[in-house]
Length: 475
Ligand code: BES
Ligand code: ZN
Ligand code: ZN
Image (cartoon, rainbow, N blue to C red; front, side):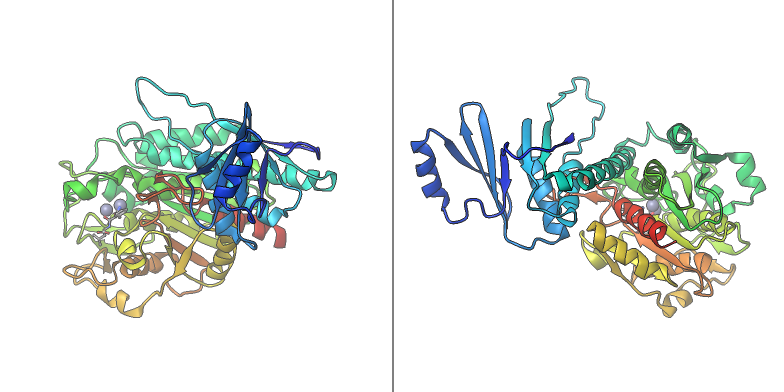
């Protein structure tokens, strides 16, 4: 919990070159004379945290280089949240600007996320709390900042919780029901399309992905605000991806409960935007299905008809994300949105191309630049990739309008996936559209960094909310 205190005499957590001139050895020696215990805390470069303790009183002195960027401020916040388990601290914010304090708060709040899980014995850890010490002139601005970061973090963590939830506890219907429950108190309009409606709406691609599962697919359409849709979010929501009949090997299947991260992010983002009461109209479409190899599963070679009328030869049932998105995007386009964003854990090839820090971004029109600007404000890394004409040729089918995956070649896998989606989202390259392939960043499999502990990151939610804020400000 972050609280704000307008006072100028309590300082328990200090920062910026407080003790730089004093090497840690000297500091310890100096502290000892005053009966203060000094201890260097585990941390990461370029920061060092020294814990000074005198009886019950603790002060953490942090040395930092000057001019930290948004990533470094988030890293510092995350580092503090990981270093301090419990207790009440004060942060002297008087020297700092909102541009610096916001990412610090993101790291502090987001970095202390922990999934509760299903352990019989829950070890409820006491959390640490932090108060900011501010000048009177900062108070209003800081209070608003804390409120905003807290709201975004609440829904960011909600998205992470959804991603963490095992697939036996979260099937497409569960997720649709949860969306309804969360949207109701905020007054959002929600439509859930079940089997009958999906059939009457001709969502052939989404239904083909879900038909091998005992738990049927759903499409959830959520609307915030009135008037023309300015921002439309379409999320891939595969609650579990076995690969279908093109079955994944056991090792690759393990993390596939996370394959609904795109839908979780779309849902969390629209909830955050609504809670912040941003003056903008947003729609979120959740494309929910479980990709299983049941008796009625789609076979490799089957031809299906997507909602916009294009026929698709399903050459690989493991390339299911692009199929559910094809129908979801078609639904989104009906509202003629000013900006369209799809979010998906789409390809393993994203990791091959970009590693695990930069998510893949594709798009046409104005949205890519607008999104990248928002992402640099929120401190999430995206790297723009090309919609390559040759990818389009690779998807030509002899029996249908296109196929969903190239057979026998893994070259440029992330680009081919994006090109498939482009055929539905922006076939004439005229739609303001962004495709985010977050397969490589949706789960942090390495050491904690910035606001991300190990596990689901809820990546891109903060940038989407920032974009909504920017669009609201310029409308
Ligand atoms: N859900 C996977 C992508 C994925 C892989 C996400 C690893 C997170 C971690 C997706 O549905 C998939 O399996 N894609 C295939 C596409 C291929 C068959 C064209 C892939 O990446 O191998
Ligand atoms: Zn798949
Ligand atoms: Zn998938």
